[in-house]
Length: 252
Image (cartoon, rainbow, N blue to C red):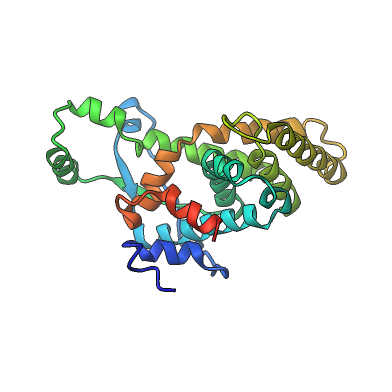
């Protein structure tokens, strides 16, 4: 079935809907450290190599959705619970995917002309300071994402550790509106239990590793969905709702 008519931004949809993700090809990318002063942190930024980076990010996202779909314990949940968990957890799972694929990226300042154009098009009359504060794609947000990635990389997680950590994040019983809250809580505890066993086997002398891994995972919640969407996917999907695309792929 040709989805191009129903999906005006069919490039991303087709990437996400492919079952055989191609290589990420991230070896030529580099993330440039920037100044840490307050004014620098508030700068609006965008991806330097937008086309290649967005495609690679889409490859990571498709693996994230396929991971969810591959879990029988997730697939057997009520559809509403699957949807709520997707809505709540796709961003931190995506960040875990970025770390697992060792994906790095480079950003650059958004041209002033582009900012002014957006202000005019949206009839906004805010000060430049307010505009910077309200935008999700600030340099500060990028630094926060990279801080999370660096913490994960410093742990040097194995594929098994990544898998069970993803399960512990996905099965979040604190998500509002769940029909199977107790069951999902049990799935989270089971994921954490197996993760703990794996860590004990791989790192028998590192008694604080399990706690460190969970604390690092909790920091992924500080990476806003809106920021992830705007930085990695908005250049491709325009005003299309990313969650709608992910939902259709999840239930396809």
